[in-house]
Image (cartoon, rainbow, N blue to C red; front, side, top):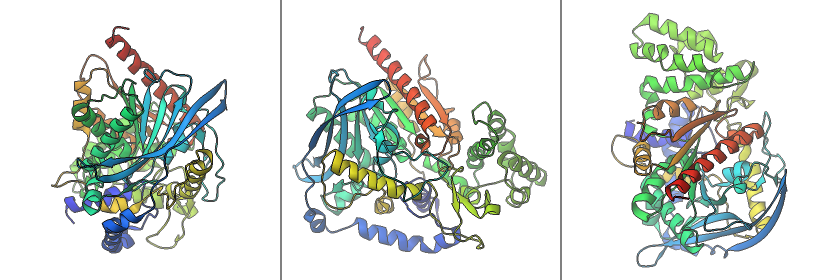
Length: 524
């Protein structure tokens, strides 16, 4: 399998937030072709069938008052969709959204934040109901159960205090859909077509809601974080819109950089090791960047050097096998057998093999029973991603239907594997990356602020991978305008109350700094 064909498989398995089942390596290899064919067939429905589905309902506008600690929020919620058309006016896609706007604020100066999740193939329900919206689905705890209660509670950490919110479901997620046929679907289900559609949605929403003068921000998670710099650069150059700030949650910056682990690229191992050390440390004391300083220094220093020496240098192999076992808590015999090169799948099965448990790739502190503990390979649901799918799906459907009075027919796609299977990642040998767009956006706008956030125990998008790549950015001005914050937890660290609170505080500071820079630029 060449790099060009291997990239989409890696991204679908590891980064999509769209595949409900994690598959053992031996079993996965034999099913990839059948799975891809099935997803492509589902994605390529005939045009007539796509257009025969019942139209989405018109906008539903409801007003709410929410009691939160120390304050009361009065706001308007709007659930609806915008239809994107081609130059001839033919409908192309219906993109669903939910917005929350404060009733006691000047809309012309009030910040507005556009939020998307990842996948490609995930709806915005994760950020909406687990992190920043006015209502919260509580999932904090050592385990997540698919049968967990789905009742929402007021979210004390909502961002609605300091920004209006617009949650976007790209085509194929939530109730959103492509209505223009196969060629249109192929365009939306691609890296660039996706950004074009999101940019068109943002401009359309701002114009229709009379919010063009509002300060504009973006938050995206995982692949949504990957979208952020691309969308910022697209809006700057093509739509005449400038974001004041980007919040990138558990993002990917360079797919090719991470994907090369299958080819033995040493930086992929170096990027993962601090997250393994955080897992071990979390069981004996608090986790912090200071506490992980030795692991980080080793990962990008002696470990990287010895990895580069290769398998032929037996002394180097012996050194890294021993040190990796010390930092990670994995058995030394295992790390020796693997020559100190540990991948995500190995960690999932081996970290708690003695207890017959598998850990989540999204948070190594979450575990579930291994359904095949005596087998060399195992087929299992991820203890975080798979477990939260049922309660979150039920919660968002009930919220839209009952609280927001938006009664759409048809399936709500929280995670749509057919989108991931049909996604076009581009051509050529290099995987998609957004660091160039990030540099361009920062260079063009000296006021733009960026906050990158991660969870310590996330193996899907390890925080140290982002740190190593962000280290390569030039200064781009006298001020440091890109920051990295890491919290307890994994990919969805915000499901932990303490991490969600710290996350909100960091984001609010970014908003304040961005708005101060904007005011200074305007001479206020």
